[in-house]
Length: 412
Ligand code: GLY
Ligand code: MN
Ligand code: MN
Image (tube, rainbow, N blue to C red):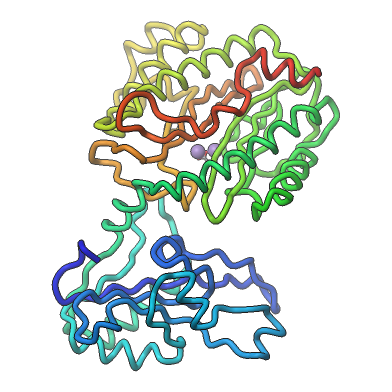
């Protein structure tokens, strides 16, 4: 609210519940902005902020779906007005049916309306969201108001995590750790990728996670070279590696882990050599995640480190590097994705990317080397918190990553 312009209102909508067909729906996932700002994890909720409202009680309003005995019996308990205040800290709670009337009245006091458009750098949304419908309707009804966008404010504040958020992310990472350790005693030749998925889901849910923070990638052998492989339906064969990009959510916060382990419990020499190279790139990259670093420059540096490792592995030669195209450097043949993204309420979270990094931003570090010619790929990924001084704090420091440790745990 401190960053809003004079005489302005901001409105934040919940996500729709997406229909499958007949009377089926996907499970509800709250829009992370209204969740971040209010803690309200319920469909059809609307948050309205109006710092200069004439009536002080209209400076913050939460609109929730009216609940009653019938709804309580069929759908379970929904937020009452009292509970909505407890959850959100907002005193003024109205039923959703009052929204149009209250909103119209408040808009007569305001000049500007903030819309919550999606400006995420990777967004690609084809469906109309609840926010989109609200924007359309609002523009029709209030054509003489000015429009502003709340996304830049949310990107900035959500990008720097509060202590409470980091604590929740640590819990998500600890649950992920339990899942991964369980696997080390489970994986052997002949297991199917989906059996690994089932082990993880079991461990996540029994630890009070709702499940995977994102669609899990469990890719044995050459499947690891398909970056978004999510079929998870192949048998894990002796001698192959399995790349697992799998992690738990907790309280709507994501963790994001990748580990690559040998199906038989032991890396062969070539696998180990490439693994150690990826691990060195990860360790070097992590050291650069300090206040002041610029994301794009960081990625260039990571590319240089990766280039030297690929030369060492014999995957590139000097001519490849000398003749490389600056827009698509030679290393991208084997490492074609980014090294880091913000993580938080979204797995690919909000956060400033064009200004210097700040303390308490949380990033993944996830280099990989993918070699279809050799039918394996390796990625390693941890989540780290930028500190005021020194190296970042690794929320996944306890999750085994060294070759010896993984081999020992798999064979004990
Ligand atoms: N699991 C998605 C990612 O690593 O970015
Ligand atoms: Mn990942
Ligand atoms: Mn990631």
